[in-house]
Image 1 (cartoon, rainbow, N blue to C red):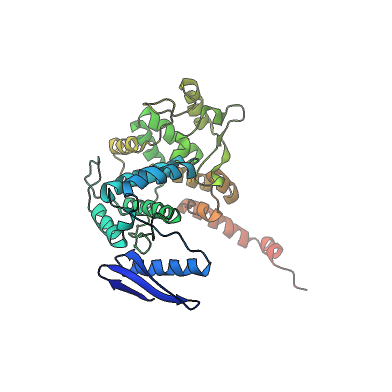
Image 2 (cartoon, rainbow, N blue to C red):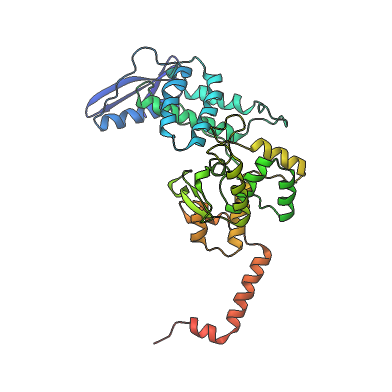
Length: 363
């Protein structure tokens, strides 16, 4: 890689088809310069010469709240949770990068944001814990998407997030609630949370999928619900309802004055988006230790479905997974379940007729 530094800025110098290319990368770190050189070589090899950025580039705050916000709203119009996640990250990024122009942001500055953000205390949190590694990584991912768009629009030369190493994230242990824990939790939950949690435990829906249910999604005659949007195309599915889930949704449909089964208490024209704070309060009141995530209610439901004997292809469709490998994560045979399975195996091998029927015939 033929990169070199002039003052604080790195340049590249290489030849392609006998033509010397000697240009500034506008980067202040070697790794970013190498990435810019590789990108430039690829563009030239394809016969594509991008329009150079002339003059000052937009300020981060203007681009983030303008072009990027509009693009994001259109790109993720069917995935409200993704759009909201990006907008939360943009709020945190805006506080740090503010009025800096896009080309003034390099990988060194991104590394500084990563360090500063990880040392901050969580806002509006009672435990006073620092911002988690996962939260910082989500912000970096949003920043990477933002700069990809800026490069495509010729408003930035390189993406400074490329080459920045994300924090390692520990695999979070998924909990399966015991029946006694479930009852204590539901008793301590607010009416809204109790209904959301009950539907999750009876259907295996994701929290966001429950919150976005409309009255029209419930078919009382067929005792089923239709999930019309989600993380992937496979998330669109029909799920038969248990008596318990049907009773909750039927009551909701009769009581709500909105098109939403779970309308926002502040604006009935919109659905509630999150019940995480109510969940944290309920687990504290119920004194459940160790605690669990709201998402673990889905994990509990799908695990119970697997243990009840539902085959994996059917469970995959109920869960809305695109691959059956994802469904396998929810299969956790209990010791008693494994003992019954080995008893069946023992009974099979103990019967000579079974073994002879299973053995291939030798000719």
